Image (cartoon, rainbow, N blue to C red; front, side, top):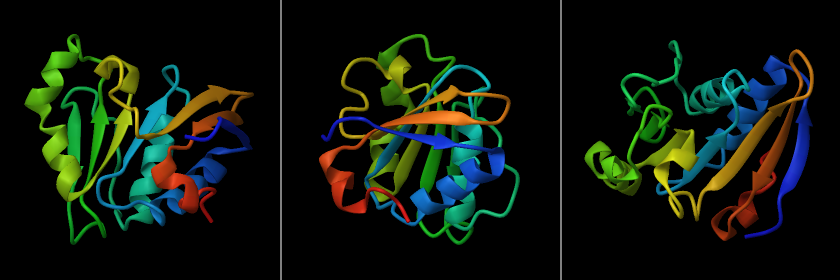
Length: 153
């Protein structure tokens, strides 16, 4: 894993664009981990990724369902949008079937720190922090599996 990379995102539109660029790089087996406080922009970034994969509908945070799967033909690659905010015990991850979902597609996980130590060891880990009303600072930990795909274009 390379050292963290920081970048600034000026607006919601720029966050969506960045998400669409990430989508062009996603492969089967990938995990994108999205960290940040409530309202930081995790779901906005997830919306951009899903749009980039071809999804044309509404995107909401899976806070209550924990997992929203998106499958072809609505997206080019199966991807599960996961929100672990309400997860009380990392052992419950087994019941969510995330390992299986990752073998045939990709994962995008909000609140990954709730998955316990090592859960996101090989993930592209993006931490989002507000820098103003719409501006955000992203700190990105790029794993080896993403080094040839980073930065997204």
